[in-house]
Length: 133
Ligand SMILES: [Zn+2]
Image (tube, rainbow, N blue to C red; front, side, top):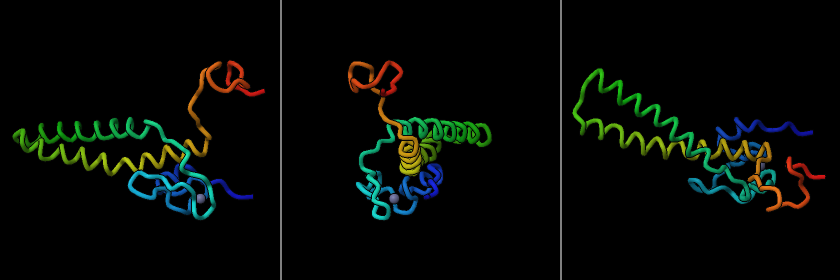
């Protein structure tokens, strides 16, 4: 019996959500089609829009909070605010994107989350609660 890999750990380390050993990404945000260690098919998963929402929330809090603190303590000119916070936002977004995509990818992989389909549109074998007979 194999011990399941923690999706949080695999996600934060950007590793395969099935075995936790191989790297998840082939390129910056391109997921490997298949894990070279365990053979799990990785290319079919999707993290959805959740990473972007959390990037907006985390960076919005950090950048706006930082700008407020700097403004109250030092009262710098506006060009200095722009010089500080525009690159911080861009670099922060680029740094957080693979990390959060990997985390949500691992969570959707682990809990087998899929896109929900309305009754009558997709799977005819499911009832109104989404259960199959
Ligand atoms: Zn693997």
